[in-house]
Image (cartoon, rainbow, N blue to C red):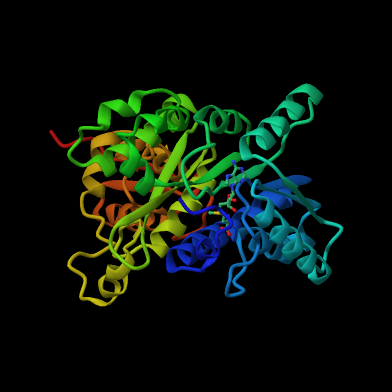
Length: 372
Ligand SMILES: C[S@@+](CC[C@H](N)C(=O)[O-])C[C@H]1O[C@@H](n2cnc3c(N)ncnc32)[C@H](O)[C@@H]1O
């Protein structure tokens, strides 16, 4: 096994670029939205890494510093907590942060704390302090990005998600979990990851990859206080094999919707995935199916809501449950289908939040009764 500071682990690969693209696009929305209405927001990078890759590309901590600074004029303050366990990586991280500090335009609003230590211990001590002092943690985005799958107990994820306005973005290292699942030595780590030994039920599953990621999301919902979750598959850069899944979990519908839009925009042909060496071909070939194909959505809306009146936001929120049946549609899909239904006469729209032709938020959608 290569050590975490081995230089080959710090070569910037396409799969890392994809991960950073999702992170950056989401933080671009999360920071200004949460930061403009809350005096303190926090970004935690629990497996922070070096700060800079071999080719000079910024790591997630530097990326977050740049974004925090860009939005800082609109915020009171944003705290960045960067935790790194490996000594050499930590020294690199420190240098990268120190090099970035003088470039910040609003250093008084971007508060950066780095520490050498273990993710789980660092986060639990933050949570303990919030509990014992009675000072709430505040809106927090926790990025959990290990090389492997140890050191991320579901219990800790559950403690984070139990607090209001918190979210986790986790690199679920599917390849390694799947590869080593039969090894007795790793059982305690896998128990910690899933919060129990339920994973043993899927070891014989024919599609073990899918079963593992679905089980992990199930555990987030049933054992770790997540109301919403999403996953995005990331293949290795030089093959089509799955490397990891980026899993987002939170309790806030707006954040969930934003991340869903980001995942859809970064995926291929409507799939929430980066497909490795197949990715470019998939993007450029004639589409076999239309990623914006919403057929089936109208029938599902009628099945659920015939004869009822419900707000536009209420429809989209309710469609997220149960989590494993949530369709891949985002706001514009719902708007398009409901407007079409309005022109066909199967719904009528009572505008509360929007004017004239719009459809948003608290606008009421009145569904016609089911035809007998
Ligand atoms: C995948 S890298 C992080 C990459 C970084 N987040 C980025 O996107 O640029 C994982 C890092 O976590 C560190 N690490 C490993 N175990 C850790 C633990 N228990 N707590 C904190 N850091 C850990 C490793 O040394 C490594 O630097």
